[in-house]
Image 1 (cartoon, helix red, strand yellow):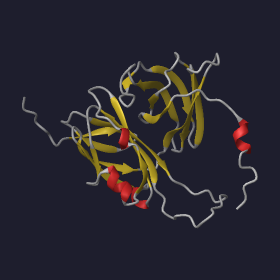
Image 2 (cartoon, rainbow, N blue to C red):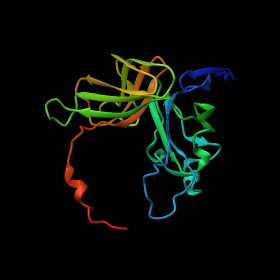
Image 3 (cartoon, helix red, strand yellow):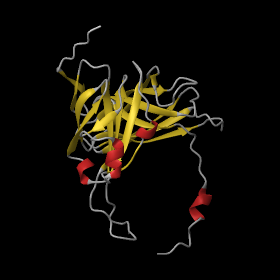
Length: 253
């Protein structure tokens, strides 16, 4: 069967504000950007690197890979010191209708906010992705268990809104691997209705009871009036143990 590739640009995410090429088997569903920052109250053992980069997660729907960034492989960017780490060593090719997540942590200002990069991969084509400081984001996701079992049945989401408009969250969808399959390939679950409004410049939270969750990795897709907000993380029940805080209590510089 002949496949016709059309260079037609479609808006992939209004909230994220970037474009993707259509006509390919895969598409960019969204990104999550965590800019590096400096806390003036922190003290360093040696002069800190003045460059501020960002951690970037790219959510890819459909079969795509392997990926190049500005024409270079993740291994090359790691070797030159432009990236601190990446997770492409465990990346697999996605499947139709499923989601995979590609993550890297920049080390130089070239990969910080205000920059952009060209992402090219088989099945995806070539996409330009801006590294933009978000105005809305999932700042934390905590998993709890109502009966002390290892599998959590409650999620608490903290959502930040740094925009000038109120943010309303309306739905939450988990993307989970199928049992006995590759944990990197995530499949959509039925969305759950939520109701939360975060005023401009404020933070809000959602506490939601869900069926028991598997102990694996998940992608969270929070539907909002500003478009979907994304996060990729491991599901594990939150516990509190203060003992670790005393291990290095006598450490001096």
